[in-house]
Image (tube, rainbow, N blue to C red; front, side, top):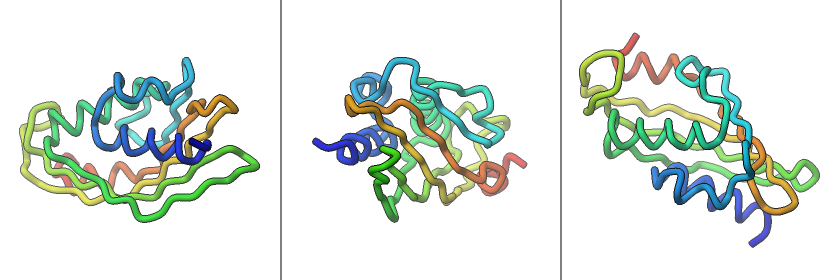
Length: 139
């Protein structure tokens, strides 16, 4: 697999909520996670993000899905870009309020930087979290 194929495999594994055990072979040790989104300010590693999104998608919003709209790879910067829509309904525990049964369809972008060994070394999530939180009835 080339770098883009490995990044794509990681993306789908992460977004399919398969958890860290399924994702860890795609990720370099201590890979950095960055997001300028309120719910994720405490998350600083890719492992932490995978754990967060898996918990959110299996406990707080069980049955959540995603739709990939576009993907690309910048060879010079070894960076994969994925644009998708996250679809979730707050049906479970774990939110700041009891389940609202409200749904969000929010766009997001991942920029995933790879190293020469084909491992994720950093991941940036671009996400308008406040939009999602309003749709879910949390704001």
